[in-house]
Length: 269
Image: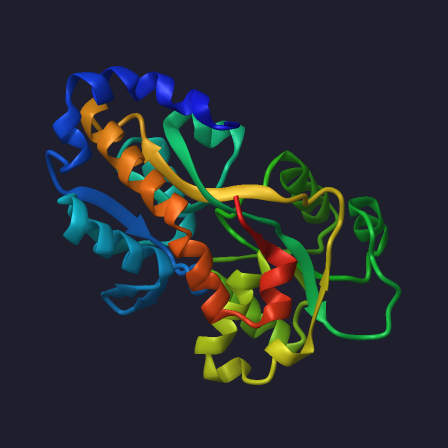
């Protein structure tokens, strides 16, 4: 199994404390940011595919989760410094592996997303960099790997990059014509468009383009190595693995999104 090595760090706890699989020793701190249908924040109210899943797990497994809304960039910093027990949802990256144990829920990919027009298709990152007329917006704190980071660094050097606090801000800029394109998972943008009346009609106009620099990746949950005991790490990894094997997350995405958006950006793990 590709991700079996993540159990090495918690194997002793799983063997020495079998009851840890049934409950956590304390409340689990889960800061969250708006992420399409995955995380939906309405004031202090937190809902969405992943919070609903964790609440269901809480009832079944005895691990209790405390959600608190924060900007995405702050969420990343909190996880890096051990002030967040869980990072959710997250693409797997080498830098995040330093601080957490990754549990894959599905595979997904980011794409180039623009308002449909007649321009020639973009088939690579270099073509995007060469098309200096295209203005690109991204969300601060989103990370789809080294190639993605390289692209946004170059776009920033060219003066074509707009960095926004959340996907809703990006959707508004696209609707106004202030930017031409974004780079993110299509389900994330579709999720915020569905909830934002000010961008009504934008979803039907979207054009999705995949490029080799943004391949299919694993997406899921990081469990902190810094803030949690080995026993609580083991408990959380165990219950999240059970949820992943059940297919509940994938089914939720499939129910929420149009078939074309779903098929272009989500696959079973």
